[in-house]
Image (tube, rainbow, N blue to C red; front, side, top):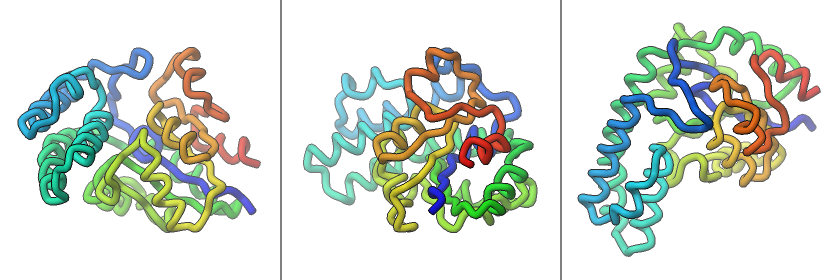
Length: 233
């Protein structure tokens, strides 16, 4: 049986017209700094120690560290839900702004069509919200790419997000599969895939240098989605 193919969305199928520049896995893109600062202020207000969240430099790690702290310190389910909803607000502001200047990567539809014709089953796992995924994946501007995926998982279906493997594990349960290849553009995709027991292929739209790529051990590195079938076959 061919492995299940799981795809990230942002940076893998769609991309900002002028993406941020990365040094290693870090970016100093101004809007991201503002959103991270807002998220930290919110969770500190709710009792999460500043020394826990202030050193964190990624929105996903702030999200996961906050959730873990709340669960381990006897916050009620209602309190946890309220705090996570509050930090989701700035997250959504940045997400919508990013998507307003995002476009479908040219090779996406030909690549997905070829893989479907070869008999691969495909799903999508994204840190984006359900609202954003449904709007984008069904939009004609993005060639309705969602039709290639029977199932999708967004952050709204998860407690923890990538680099935690929970989103991948959730979609594997939907397909009742454990043999999979994950195609993504970031270190968080790699870490989540590796922890879930899959094979990671990096679509290097972030233009990571060789040392950075080597640090998260992808099975393969591709520059265009149309190269994926060649590697898989």
